[in-house]
Amino acid sequence: MATQISPCSSSSTTFSPSSLNQETFSSAKFFNFSRKSSPSKWAFKISPKNQFELKSSNGYPLNAVSLHDGKLSIPITNSFFNFPIILRLIPAGFTNALVGAAEKPLAKEHLPPPKQSESHLTVTVVGASGDLAKKKIFPALFALFYEGCLPQNFTIFGYARTKMTDDELREMISSTLTCRIDKRENCGDKMEEFLQRCFYHSGQYSSEEHFAELDLKLKQKEGGKVSNRLFYLSIPPNIFVDVAHCASGRASSKNGWTRVIVEKPFGRDSESSGELTRSLKKYLDEDQIFRIDHYLGKELVENLSVLRFSNLVFEPLWSRNYIRNVQFIFSEDFGTEGRGGYFDNYGIIRDIMQNHLLQILALFAMETPVTLDAEDVRNEKVKVLRSMRQLKLEDVIVGQYKGHSKGGKSYLGYTDDPTVPNNSVTPTFAAAALFIDNARWDGVPFLMKAGKALHTRRAEIRVQFRHVPGNLYKRNFGMDLDKATNELVLRVQPDEAIYLKINNKIPGLGMRFDRSDLNLLYSARYPKEIPDAYERLLLDAIEGERRLFIRSDELDAAWAIFTPLLKELEGKKISPELYPYGSRGPVGAHYLAAKYDVRWGDLAE
Image 1: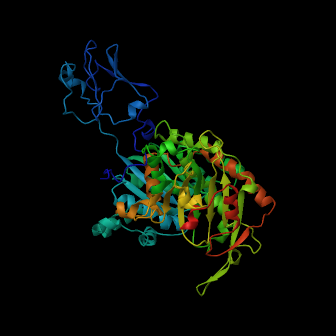
Image 2: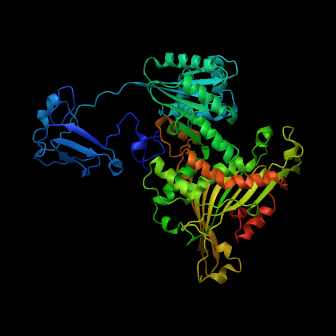
Image 3: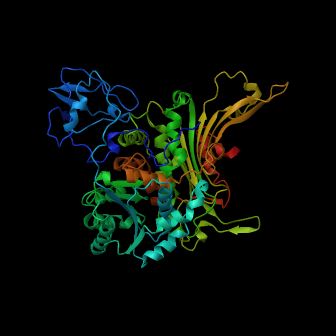
């Protein structure tokens, strides 16, 4: 049976120092509890001559506990936080109850710790009138509220230039809110309760005065409580810095935390990305900036590390010794259709490959991190990215879809879109071969393929293993040994699934082989609706969990791989290979794969 975990658990499954608020601990490396304290302080009264043992909530002893000069000292190390710890404290006025603790077990009854100051969470969606806010952010916030994942005291604010009242905002977003499939009975009541927590303030993105007005409204809703403020920048990147300046100077929390979620794109190349980072850091600390890539919040991407690091059958195979190639495939069955103006400034390489697919690749290929702490995981991702070769033009194929008629229906080409220049050479398709120059992956091609207006919608990771050496059944497969290759597939979307292709004998008197799937189809195994990626990432940002967000040096390493290629493509105005709308993409992608003795795994499906 599946282990039941709170739906509000953050993406990190272990308790680590980084998951705590900054205010929780000082920079000291020890907790010291005096055995002689005033009645207003918390204390243990324990004879220093006695030996005793504290245990964690899972029953294991804390061997790091020691007595020095009559004080109890607990070193704070990473291993200390590998399990939840309960210290049973009682006021010094009642320390007689602990005399002789060495002879008696700690009492199960204990007084609760001192009450924390009550706090209030405010999430401000900057760019609240845009499509992303309406279709993804507000529905994700409602889903968290519906599941009971938001704190008791919270408020949602929308901020944009559009003139709008609170009621008009509620009307706008109400049509996009949905309830979980298995809890529809109180959907209407929950929706109404959520909408009553939503408010709106109109203002300019570069106006400190307007953000000061927003600050006054936030303070009214917070009611004197400790204020924790999260700003979600659902706006074009050219106004990120203006909003960061105004929000940090005029609307940041004075007694709690302030965090800012920044949506991609994070620049167009190494130079613009570096400039954006430097500009943001004038007003925000690095740990306040949460660079979001929503693909890192998808269920199968989250499960990638679990599959690899918690199953003995996979980790020994995860190297050049057994893996022949790895493929990251992204395809959409529609074109730009109204977004051509935005897309033409970036193209498929910046829009999909440099962020979504490269982030998944880094998670796939990284070494085992020391812990699941955010910095440990991101350190390993950075090592992978820095080990990768810069992309060269000969290792890339670019394409652009053209108009096509199918089934009596005509589809416009990319340059037929009225928002796209007629002579545009912006690629809507790209395939690339990347390499990681380290001991684990030396010589293994990592193939990426991403495109619009293709024959199907999918996102998947395909791991093709090497041929069986000296295969006894080689003659049964004929000349095409690729048909006998084991393949692990993680389908990220749609219809999330994990399946392993194996060779199997067909029942009967003859020796006929079949390629079968060992299949984990999520919809069959886990009937509950899978949360949207934005829900997980918003919850992580609220809880201060940074593991699935992109660090600045990670971003620098990612752009270093693609920037030389992008400059060459645009400097030489390389013409993309045309492919029909609804096809499998340009033929050149198949030649690129064949160059490395690889066949695209999605061709057989």
